Length: 308
Image 1 (spheres, rainbow, N blue to C red):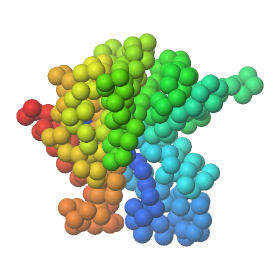
Image 2: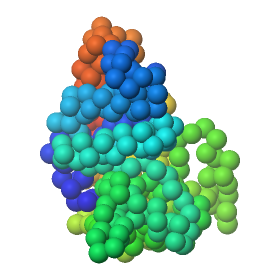
Image 3: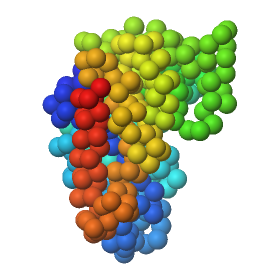
Image 4: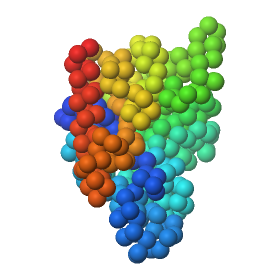
């Protein structure tokens, strides 16, 4: 799957991923009203609204981008109907040939970790048959429990030719409370980065590992260090746009081949119609605003890479 992701990045010339993280207040009123008219102001109504919202954005952007990243918490808040919307979103994105990164941030050990891996990336056995559960192409994983928490995911990824993005240095302001702690003379995130590179050596694609890393756009200097520590690791970079990251900040996350990183923007794209920059497009045409935001993001990152 890492080979497919790289191929699609090359074809689109867009090393970006759209974060499908819908809050109900992002969903335009006309979509909410239609969903509530059919299902009432219920969990089912909310789930229908976010599904239709997602579908509009995907229809407007799928030809420009290689991948999407739905954040499962935004769906879980609506219970079982929300998880059904999550699954419908995954299936629809895959029907458009998009790579799907399930932002699930799981982290446990043993059979529990294996069950998470099977549910999201593998197949579960039911009698004489096997079924894919959510069936994302990649998943995000928290490495805090060490190899015991990551290995079950890697094992499933090897079986299914799928991949991971493991949290190394996250974009949030308080990440340094733990991640920047000095351990044996070096910050913890460097030790984690080295371990991710080691895990990745056992599951390589043609030029990059299936085992990637998450490194926030808000810490470009740390990204420069981690890029050197993880030369064959693809880096998922959150924090672009709404969290302050800009194209010029991101060049260090990429290798000299122009690959090695994929940059995520969530509300900066899916709620673009709410921004002053795109307000003239209008709420009814929210998906057109999202498309314009994608085009602007591609231009920003491409321009930064070309001028480095």
